[in-house]
Every structure is written in structure tokens, then in C-alpha cells.
Image (cartoon, rainbow, N blue to C red; front, side):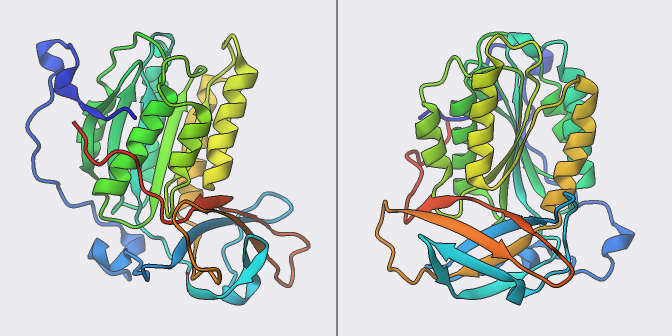
Length: 324
């Protein structure tokens, strides 16, 4: 599997070289959050070693987010068998997020609007989120490690060196590994934007999905700008598989102007999810794949659709343990 490379590894002009990290600045105060605990560590959901944690979005039949359900509305199934829910939360939990942006040659004219959308995603998210930026083409570069400083994130996104191919699977898997190894927050998300089909990864789609479906792995939200792509059907299918199986969602805007609104929609969904924890009734055996299905029923709703990951590999770990 490919590692995330620090920006200094890439050939770049002097002004493009990364600066030594500086201390994180505290997030700006938000009047709407005055009644919440200020310390972000208070939002970290504590879970037992054997507990599986799901982050679920619930939609009604009109595709509106439903935010007023209690624990009794949910039933979790693992391998078809109902599970006992042992923890349940519906609060705006800060997330550890990787912003993973295609920096291949075909993205050159698109990066300005894509970068703005990525920044607006952060602005619309919980101010205590911890975010890193990965730009990728044939390789993936960690241009900004975890921070909530918008200026640092903007500087990382502005490291545009659009050239080369598209190693999407490698970049997403390496970013998931970075989350696994270094994130302080339990809830993990990857936001990826690309305009093409993967043509440079050492990982296959199947291998990438298996890595992403590790126990308590990240949800992937994807935007595919595929209007001019030579093979849009295969690229679209790949993004749908990655997002669906991890509990995220893939969007395919018809125009570049739609990307910003989509990023805000993603931020809104992430902030309005249910955290559901359960202990599997069947003892876990390392490497076993467990299928997950979550149902929700409540008065006043004809049909509720729950989106979460479709399964996980019990006790699985990422195949790498370090970042260069």
C-alpha cells in the first residue's frame, strides 16, 4: 500500500515548500454552541473494546434528514441477527476528516472552485473538527496534517501542481490509514473529489474497499466531476461502491458550480448523524466479514431510510503502520 508523502518530497518551487508546523489555533467561538462543553475531548465517544460503533444518517421518503429519533426507533442487524444497542447518541460530534483532492492534470481548471467548496465544507462543519489535506495524482501528498486553522487548510489546497495520473484508491486508503493511526477523535470521515477514473493505483478497487471496511473505519463522501471523463460509468461505479459500503454517499454534479452546495450538504449530514454502538452477539473472529443493516421506524413516518456502512472486517487492521 502507498504511504502519504510529506509535501517536501515532491518537486516544487521554493514558495511551494511546506513550512514547519506551528501550534494549532483554537477554533472561533460559535454562539450556537455556547451550551456545549468547550473541550473537544468531551465529544469523544468512549466505547468498549468489542463495541462496534455506527454513524447513521436517516432520511424520510422525501429525502429530508430526520433528527428527532430515539434509541427505540432503531434495530441493528449483524449477519441478519438483531443486536443489542448498548450506546446511543445524537449530538454534533466533531470528526477527524481527511480532505482528499485530485491533483492530476485534468483537474487544473477545476481546482479553484473545488478548493473553495472544500473550505466551505470546513466552515459549515463543527468548529472542533480536525482536518488534514491530501493532494494526489500518481502519488499522494500530505500537504497539511490535522488542524482546524482555515488559513493552513487553504494554503495546503492551493498547492496545485496538476499533472500526472489518478491514483485514487491509493490516496483514499493511505488517508484512511492516517486517520486510523493519528486521529484523536473517534468519528472519521474522508471527503474526496476527483474528475476521473483511477489509472495509477497499486491498490485495486476491491482491495481498497476491504481496507476501508476495517472495524470502525471512516465514512467516505465523494464528489465525481465526470462530465468529460472518457469512461464515466466505471468511475461513477467505483465512487458509488466506496461511499455506499462505508456509509457515505457519492455525488455526481452536472456542472462544477454545483460542487459548493454539495459540500455544504455533506457537512450538514455529518453534523446530524446518530452514533449507535453494539456488541456483536457472535464472538468476533479476526478477518471475518460481518454484514450490517440498520432499520428505523417511528410514528409519523411512512418510511425511513438509514444509511450507514454495510459491513466490516472484524478485528482487521490497516496493512501499513507508518507514514513517510
